[in-house]
Amino acid sequence: MAGNSKRRGATRNAGSKKGATVGTGGKGRKALEGKGPTPKAEERPYHKAYKAKQRSDAAAAKAPTQASRKPRDKSSGNLELIVGRNSVLEALRTELPANVLHVYNRIDADDRVTQLVGLAVAQGVEVRETTKARLDTLADGQTHQGIALEVPPYVYAEPEDLLIAASPVRILVADHIQDPRNLGAIMRSAAAFGASGVVVPERRAAGVTVAAWKVSAGAAARIPVARATNLTRTLEDYKSAGLFVLGLDADGDVSLPESNLLDGPLVIVVGAEGEGLSRLVREACDQVASIPIAATTESLNASVAASIALYEASKAVSR
Image (tube, rainbow, N blue to C red):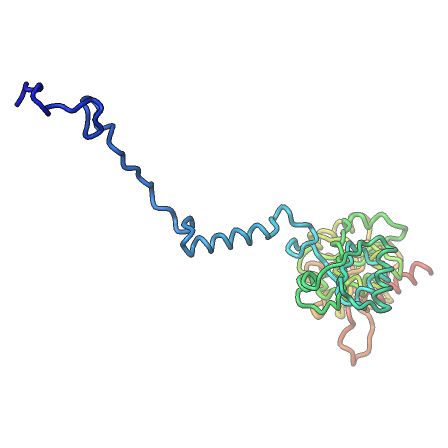
């Protein structure tokens, strides 16, 4: 009954723990604590997604990052590799510039292995023992025989650099030669006949690769090779510098021995295998000459044609 607070049991003792006391607002109750939003599947240890993420993170930690990759990693695109005992020995004999010689750490050394390791040490090439798994990765399916040689990318000259040479200037231009072995043979001929250098297009043409270097028989170390962004423009620049441009083609205007351009500063242009000179390059030539051959032979290999033209030019200068 209201106002009868003095009756027995109407109020609880101040020390009682049951129920709410006056003015508490329910603060004495045991509050319910929420657990928050439901965790993602990959954050729950008992879930299969959690285990999959753990495996993925572990694999990512072991893999090299883009910043930590070394320039000679295959993924960088800068690696030139020679594999096999005979090939590596031949490359070292011609003093092909190299960075690292990889040798299988359990290789059965024979005379070739002993010799190529000795050549590498003498030339200052790092010799590195490695596992078969690493060699398999580097060789990318090629038979390596426990030996692989890393070669740095070739450093090209600029076309104008070839004008700085002993008189008369002789420059050989390869008009979109596709086979690096042909390019290597052209480089070898250019070096043999004292040419100032070789020019190749920057795109859609063979460059100085390991294959070209090997065929050049070391000539690549003695003669500069330049890359031209625009071959026609480069020929026009050479003409402005005082050189004549002589193209080689089976349908030439004159026979090569009859050319009147051979004894002066000269650019000799050889066309691609099968296609010959491209239209714009042919139009940029001061003269197009043909090499006399037997009627039973359709055409000459590009490197052979270059050799003959360089020989004829060297004869004309010495007269």
